[in-house]
Length: 223
Ligand SMILES: Cc1cc2nc3c(=O)[nH]c(=O)nc-3n(C[C@H](O)[C@H](O)[C@H](O)COP(=O)(O)O)c2cc1C
Image 1 (cartoon, rainbow, N blue to C red):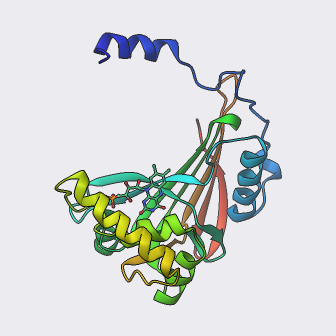
Image 2 (image 1 turned 90 degrees about the horizontal axis):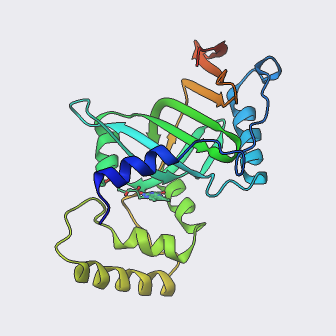
Image 3 (image 1 turned 60 degrees about the horizontal axis):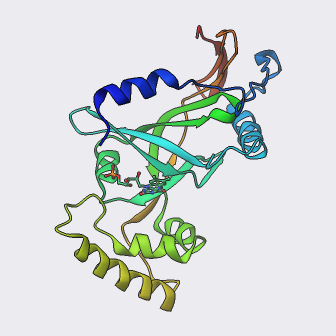
């Protein structure tokens, strides 16, 4: 078991944007498009091309009924004119939080390029047929995980999970169309999207897009 001293020594030994693994591209915000989606799409493709592991994972922040924040990782299912989409159980903790406060924030971190993208906005649940189609398009494992259900409920033992999961895998293999009523595709329609490009001299570029009255404005921010 590591001690606190070990932890602090380890922390001191680490750095961000080690040139051995990170290449910081220059980013001229004057050349950025008028709206955030094409820039997100380009940066996403560049993260994939640069070998960023799991660039499609993102932190999803929500707040509970008292306004207290919460955050966890989910997968990005798509980004288009309808918004940035992800899927989860409506009955999970985050699902309940989204019912109470249908607003969320996302952050992507792509360290191989020293880039971060933040997205904020209202969230809506897609119609059930779209949630079903989204799940159908995914793997047997994704269906089995969704069928296992009870996400965020207290678990009494690993054995209970194993039994539920094995039954869910069997069902998923037998019938790939098995519906999972609580599985929900959500769309975050951004009001604000910020692109952060790390700079070796710490003059990081922060370009934020704000949607005002249906039109996107662009601003630079101090790093
Ligand atoms: C790499 C990774 C990807 C994940 N993707 C999802 C996802 O797409 N949907 C989901 O419901 N949970 C996903 N999870 C699990 C969530 O992080 C979280 O544990 C779970 O959704 C329960 O969150 P909640 O209690 O806040 O509702 C993922 C976890 C990791 C580490």
